[in-house]
Length: 204
Image (cartoon, rainbow, N blue to C red):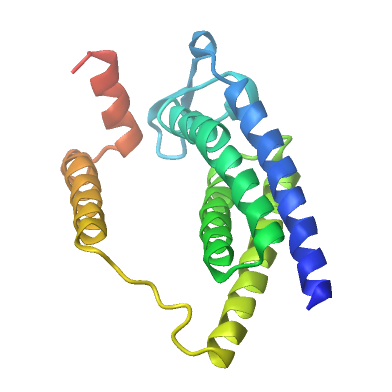
């Protein structure tokens, strides 16, 4: 039990440090003045970001990555530090579940970077962050499972109507925001990046 606690503490520190490195380099890539044109494997002209760690990513993807880095650094990192610290101090199921949730969020973020960003100098850092988050999530899941076996129903979550409405609205918003663009790009036979850049360039 003590070994698991020490491992989780070490993984928490590594998660925070690696996240700070990744997000800092990502924010330093915000420069819209170095874009250039390139031809992709489909023979389409793609506008590339051209700056920083996302220089080889498209003008469509790079702002999404930079926006994610900003959100993670400003909101998630402070919340992660507070939650991990309280989990280590109080050792309560509530904070363990919160730590599990945050680690799952960072696991998704790390997977998006490791699998979605064009190969760059931070690739090993992306892999390290993904690995640390994966081990953290797995270890906390196993810990919650063992607690649930010893104390049945102690880990149950009660959903309120407000939570259900929020999830429903979020799902509908994403569906309505992306589906029209995807359908139009399919019917026109162009990539979604080309379609999006066209509308941005023409201020539509």
